[in-house]
Image (cartoon, rainbow, N blue to C red):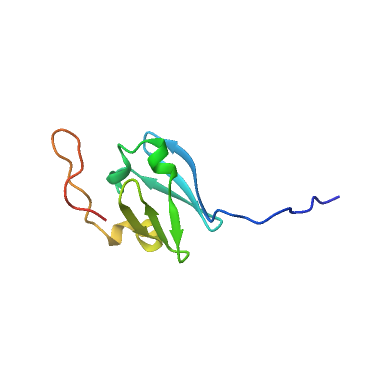
Length: 98
C-alpha cells in the first residue's frame, strides 16, 4: 500500500546540514554543497541567519539577515566566479561581495 501525499510542499529551498567546511542546501529537489572556501560570506553566520533563506524565480537565493544574494549558476559553477571576499585580520568579511 502506498501512502498518499497530503498537503503541498511549501519550501523550495532548505538548508539540510552544516559542517565546519560548509553547508548543504536543497533547491527544488537538487542538493548542493556550499563550501566556505568558495562561499566565505557564510563562515561566521549563525544557524538562524543561515537557515533564513528565500528562493526567488527558482534560481536566486537570498539570505536577508546576511544581505547575501546568490544565483544557482554561481553555486553550480563557482570556478566561473573567482572573486571571493577578502578577510581582515579580525576575521570579518571585506567589502567584496557576491
